Image 1 (cartoon, rainbow, N blue to C red):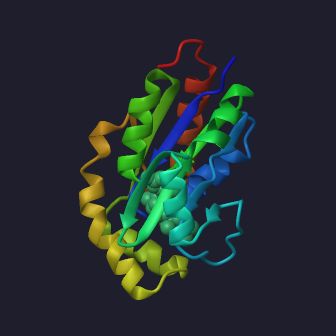
Image 2: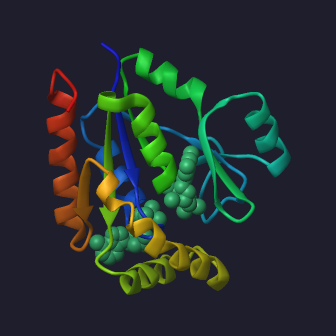
Length: 192
Ligand code: ADP
Ligand code: 5GP
């Protein structure tokens, strides 16, 4: 049987990566879809693990070669995209693939795969709390944080387009809820 897709989207700082990393340690036959990006590595990020780090030129070449399932210029001059080939390979091997993508990319992947995909929106308690989390994460310059917070209101408007919305106020509760929603979905014979 082919694998299923689980898509996580949210404004930056909502807690997607934290929740995804928690789920990857569970016994859910999940693997992370490593995206390509033209932004530089942050903190301890390694090429091929969190992202494939490309130059803008390399990114453009892959766009022209039709290698992306989807891609977006999420922030100015910062491209992010999902490569088709590794995703299809994992699905063919029966592995469930988890995505951390922006709200537009998330809606596009859901539209493409329909019932084979579950889309989850991680909602922060407020934009102010989002700012606090980005500041305390300590990985981004003030102007980068300002860009991300400025985009958050727009992104929060997408919540209703997702199959499930999980509010990440208390992290343990959000992780438990995400685990329950995923296990239900992945154990269902017919998706959704
Ligand atoms: P994203 O992947 O959505 O950008 P992260 O998972 O990197 O977000 O989380 C942003 C920061 O907020 C991290 O420092 C993380 O440890 C912290 N964080 C995540 N969830 C919570 C929460 N419920 N309460 C407080 N801090 C949180
Ligand atoms: P970050 O720079 O914090 O890792 O990611 C910034 C934003 O880009 C997040 O909203 C993240 O979900 C999104 N993103 C990461 N990979 C992809 C991708 O492959 N496609 C799209 N559309 N967005 C992505």
